[in-house]
View 1: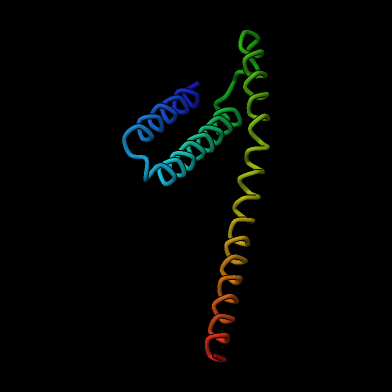
View 2 (view 1 turned 30 degrees about the vertical axis):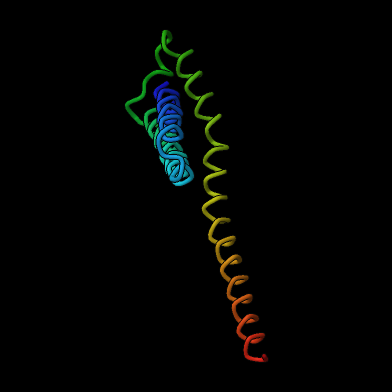
Length: 117
């Protein structure tokens, strides 16, 4: 629930930024996106630690068994998010390296063209 309040807060902050400082909007939105995703990632890790800890007795008590099942369902809904983060951690450096290599190739071609003139 608090993740959704954080999302609402971030949207309100972005509205204020658009209203008062339009030039730095892209940097601010990237920062907010990273902060929101870090909060969500941390919240999912915290939920997994709570559910799978030895102190969790919700599955053994009849009154709380339904809530434990619901919590497990929501945790399973978060596992694709973990997979997405893992893929991004692996893919983003590869993309950055490819862009860097392309820029270096263009620079070397420009140097060769200017040297031939």
